[in-house]
Image (cartoon, rainbow over all chains, first blue to last red; front, side):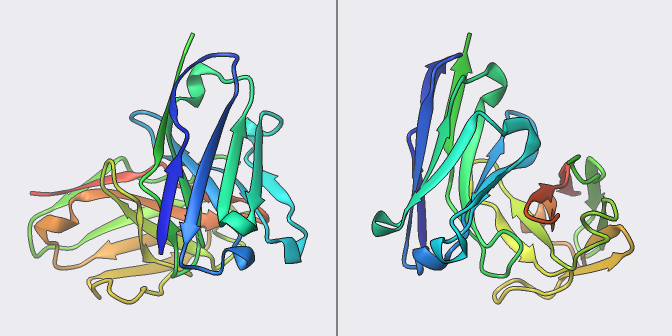
Length: 118
Length: 109
């Protein structure tokens, strides 16, 4: 299984950014992948998750990001997305894509770094 | 949803045991048997060491064990090895969301 995030970079506060995550060699259409972030010097923080289309394709978000973060998926490309609007300096960190967070078959990428400056 | 509480650090000499606690609430750890423990090296992908409270994925040494009592989960590393020095995070399902612990840095003396 390969999990590869992309799309990070240095951006200005108030702008938007979309991260991508391609997950290969799993049945992506059945997966409920999540985004997890880690601010500099801080711990892991669950950001949100999207269910499979067979389960409605609904999304759930952590309270601190609700309303500014949008998770979507393209099963034809085995790709997960995270759109971040109105970026804040506190959004700075490494963003990880992961599947099966509380299962024994949990796959994570190496993360993509987002740096937000004012 | 507040982060689960872990001690910031733990340490032990090679061959000793170290236990890390993870305290949550009746809405997360106390409500579900979906607690995982992750080993994380900076710049690397986190690796699941324990899932569903006490189950070990294939390939994880049996030196790693997990348990839960009430709203608190724990990870024990027996027979510490130098390569066990890393950050460890607990994670619990919390009803359509997940919550991670604050993280514990394990040092092998």
